[in-house]
Length: 250
Ligand code: ZN
Image (tube, rainbow, N blue to C red; front, side, top):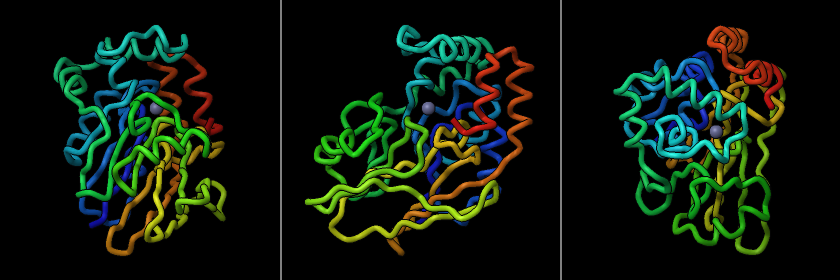
């Protein structure tokens, strides 16, 4: 079984389409949340991801954009974008967002979980090995996919030592793949990265592929027409910062 992992698309249809075009053959799609928020094409992105399958966990922006989460904890830029998204979403899409499932979910038996933030707290950011220790101990599954930080990579432990997983790429601004072999007995937290708003100083759209036959995860980066996404953001009257950050991947 080969699962395509996408996360934090953030209403960026240009990045999503580039990812789907570049994606290697897969049997199904697992979506780790934040489908909308920040970007200027929320309805288009929801249409597209719904056509790809039914395995989703909700993100904090998904909840904020359908009125399930107060905007109190959002910074001014994020909350302006969430309010704009609420205004433009079709009633059907608001309803769809309201029914997204809280993670973690186990889409593939006892080995694998999918979540947006962390194992116990769907809104927790796992940024360092230190952050990863408790959730990975709490997880009942060995392979845990998460999003939320917009940083591709993750964490692993063999029970004694802990490791930060950083994909290694050779190319700048070209299509690229980095492979992670999953070692028997080790436990993983793996972030496929953000499709629509990467923050690891690499503006290429990020995604991953999980292959349970070959027991590996491929991290992918793919360039896309970020200028088009920027133009949509500016035209929509969304904050300029949301367009600018797409140039830098941060
Ligand atoms: Zn996000």
